[in-house]
Image (tube, rainbow, N blue to C red; front, top):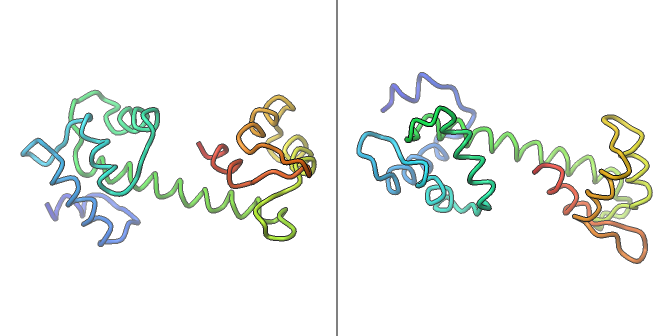
Length: 155
């Protein structure tokens, strides 16, 4: 098994890899170091995550793209690495929203955010902003909780 680890490069800590390996081994029903795609949800939940069925379906499609019917540990690690990188990008998105949170309360001006989203960078349409704002719900003062918006953006 150690040679398996050296042929792939991960930026996960050794402790995290061992945690993943234990969960993979405990919940994998196959004896040859593989799990069935249907076991992926059990393994992920064992690690303290709670993906939706849609997220789980996407993960299965990603990790078993060739429809082999099994998931090897290195494939699982690659998927978990991507999820970790994705979480890192979530932190970056949150930091971008914090720039506009003048008092640090977790809310930004919906009008200001709409202006930014429709005019800077990868511009959104008014309809796309309306759809995004449904995730965060504008309060009576015209502010929106950016944590809700951030979660919608990264999904």
